Image (cartoon, rainbow, N blue to C red):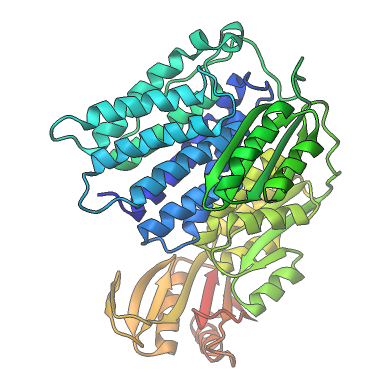
Amino acid sequence: MIDADLFLRFADLAVQGLAEAREEINGLNVFPVPDADTGTNMYLTMTAARDAAYAVDRTDLVAVARALATGALTGARGNSGVITAQIMGAVVRHIADASPADAYAGVVATALNSAAEAAYAAVGDPQEGTMLTVWREAARAGAATATGPGVHTADVVAAAVVAAREALLHTPEQLEVLRTAGVVDAGGRGACVVLEAAEQALTGRKREPVRFRVARPVAAQDEPTSGPAYEVMYLLDAGDDAIGPLKTALTPLGDSLVVVGAEGLWNVHVHVDDAGAAIEAGMAAGRPHRIKITHFGPQQVAPVRQGRAVVAVSVGAGLTELMRESGATVLEGRGQSSANILAAIRATGAAEVILLPNDEDSLANAEIAASAAEIDDEIKVAVIPTRSQVQGLAALAVHDPQRSFDKDVLAVATTASQVRRGGVTIATLKAFTSAGPCEVGDVLGAIGGDFVVVGSDLVAIAIEVVGRLVGGGGELVTLVTGAKDPEGTLAAAVTTWLAETHPAIEAITYDGGQERYPLLIAVE
């Protein structure tokens, strides 16, 4: 059964696979421009798709599918990223629009075929021996397999993977520039990674990767010996009837023309000598925006970044103020998107950044943002896997910008990992927890992200949690009061209990203002 979870699992695996293969794909990149960025562009395009999918209702197949398509389209980077966005949009929309009564093997085969056709149609001058060829051969194999009896969706995708790998091996025979360089097509290699992610999402099995090496080094700063001087990309708001004339206007200006999209939103990519003319063509067709122009020659020097910064996520007014007082750039609210985190990293102006996500939902997006900042902005970023606010506070307390980056990261990470954390909250749903069943209004005590005790008395549960945490030793207990206990009653009761039972342990209380937990607890 194809559902929203499957799409999300695919997106995660595709991002992971492209991250692992990024440098290899970059090293294969000699066509259409030897700028060693195909792997990076495909990775960032899939990351944008994944990020968008996680921002909608994760149980709604149609919402997730359309978010994947739109995220890939608006976040597409470079020629390979734009083609990937077209493939992604065609496949996921076709699957999401299918009737539940349809046989999914046939639906997927048709989706792959429609995607390959759409990709060829989107490219101004399609070349064989590129990722277009790889996708077409994958689609043909999938369609041939789907006609057999008792075929499952996984069989169709597996056949597509095998055919894609085989087609990739033959790309040097079809494109002279690949044969001369002794490499397979970089975009085709990336297409194989994406298809393999789909197969793994369906079956849970990962194929043994096939690695390709470049025959000669291709540096990112290599200048093309011929061809247009600029890459122009922009999003375009325009009706379907404007796209034909747009392509007609752009075609004589240069090469590598790709226009993809649907439903009034398009992504335009072209290599030209006259960047202004390419933008004017877009203005004649509709409303171009998010315009990006890249010169293929020597690049401008990036702004000079200096120093080190900490970016942290917080969930309460008091916690936000505490972290700001400690010198952090703070993002307020759980589950920060990778786009928000990346913007915060860039806004620091620092050459080195330590990220404290401080909740499970922000952690994965922090990794994506860190990768993008390192690739695009050459910012050195370290993500500390803090999963709670109290871990973030402890980490900030030992941060020292005067140390070397590696030593500072080690100190911050070590401190965060050694914090034993807990909290007390009120159940809002009837459920079965690790500590047993709970009713609405029950008090829940948590340790390390898991509920360990259920009761009816806030003070008793708070003391129970603290008692378990200090049972393993400790010198300092940090108590962070929440919005539902503005007077700090729980913290005061715990402090009194500690003074009577563990007089050698110091206790410190902060007003955090967090909503979910009347009390957060850390033991160091």
